[in-house]
Structures are given as C-alpha cells and as structure tokens.
Length: 286
Ligand SMILES: C[S@@+](CC[C@H](N)C(=O)[O-])C[C@H]1O[C@@H](n2cnc3c(N)ncnc32)[C@H](O)[C@@H]1O
Image (cartoon, rainbow, N blue to C red; front, side, top):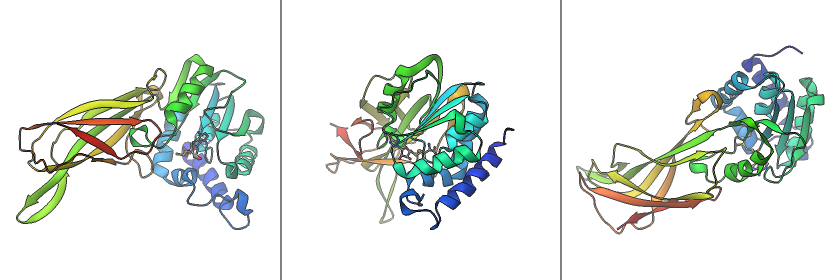
C-alpha cells in the first residue's frame, strides 16, 4: 500500500466519517456531531497540524498507541507514516465498528488492535515506541492526559516518543475597569505568567498548587485569570490554540472582596487543582 499525503488521508477518513454519521448507520454506531472525537476530527486545522507532526516523527516499524482514539485519525497517520503496529484505545463503544471499518479500508487490518476500554487501565502486550494521547484541554483540566500517561509510560521503550511531550500553561490577570462611565473586562497585566510545565515522560504530580505574581499595568478590579496552554511535540514541533484544542480558559477569583489594584501593584494568586478535574476558580492571596 502506498503512502498517502496527510491531506489525502484526512479526506479518505472524512468521507468515512460522513458515511458513519448518516442515518443509514445503526444509531449505536452512528458518529454524531456532538461526540468530542468527531468535533475534534472536523477541526481540520488542528487535525492536520497533529497529523503532520506524526507524519514527520514516526520511526519506521514503530509500535504505537492512540489513547483516546476517537475517529483514530492520529493513529491512521502513524501507520500511514510507516508505523508497524497500532493499539487504538477508546472508551466509547460507538467508535468500534467505525475503527474496524477504516482499518480495512486503509489496508491496515493486520496491524491494528481496537480496544474499547479506559486507556488508564489498558495493558499493551508489546512495548511502545510512540504514545499519542490527545487528551488535552487547557491547563490539563477535564481530560485524563496525566493519569493515562502515568499508566502507559510503564510500557514505553526508553526512546519512546510522546504526543504531546510537554504542556506549558500560562495565565493573565483580567479585571473590571471603568472608562468614561462604561465598564469593560480587560487584562490588568500585559505579561502572562507561566504557572505549570508538565513533561509527560516524567510528571509525578497529580495537579497544580502554586502562587503566581503579576505586576499590574492597568488599574482595575481583578476578577479572573485567563489561562492558555501550548503543547510541545516530538521533534520540538509546537501547537497552540485551535477551536477544539487549548482554547483560553477562565478561572474566576473566589476572593475578590472589592479590592481595586493600581498600576505598579503586585498581585498574588493561588492556583490549585488536580489534573483532569473540572475547576474554574483561583484565589487572591492577601
Ligand atoms: C479530544 S478527543 C481526541 C480524539 C482523537 N485522538 C483526535 O485527536 O482526533 C479524546 C477522545 O478520547 C476519549 N477518551 C477520553 N478519556 C478516555 C480514556 N480514559 N480512555 C480512553 N479513551 C478516552 C474520548 O471519548 C474522545 O473520543
């Protein structure tokens, strides 16, 4: 089987996703728009960026896993780029038939195992050379990336690649300002502060507990932090924000108490959460 370009591969899988979302497919196997994996697939700039990185960084004959496979698009990219064996691991059973069908259509059926299980419990029989886990939301909240990686890296070969390799999260301090009788919520400090860096091959912590300090350059009433996350992948390739990946996230301040800040003030904020949980607030440090 000849190698497809990244765009061609996306288009082939896209036609199959269209077919699988039609009413001719039984409801229990239908890939509806609201499924996260389908929404991610349809975010073409995000998907092509990740596919291109995998295309450039997959070692010939490597054993890989696509943990949280959804439509399997990142796994298909891995095999298309020369990967030798692939575990597709997804928690939602609705994807099973689709993944099996795409494996056949692409001629990969002898190189793929589909497992409908929690990736944080999955035990691959072969050692892994490439772990793909697009289980990422800004700040590593909501999705189980850290839990899944801590488990899967036990099965990794020493040279194993991880996508992502690293997640760097930043926050800006935002607040209410008044100008000519009108109110607006804008950044009070022009510099974002890095508050968390996670190296997936070595992370041991299960969350963030840190105090960040901002220097105020616009007077106002602080009311929230706005976080963003940048991902660093094999080969040093970076990705930032897409419609379905690493969008800015708000953490409201739980202790505002009407304290206005002026230009030059220093404001300290404690950020404290566990990876994977859903949390949207932080605390001003008095
Ligand atoms: C953000 S989507 C990414 C889908 C696909 N990898 C892509 O990049 O297009 C995450 C997928 O992981 C699945 N998922 C979430 N937690 C999981 C877990 N613990 N084990 C296996 N799959 C999981 C979700 O059902 C969803 O399909």
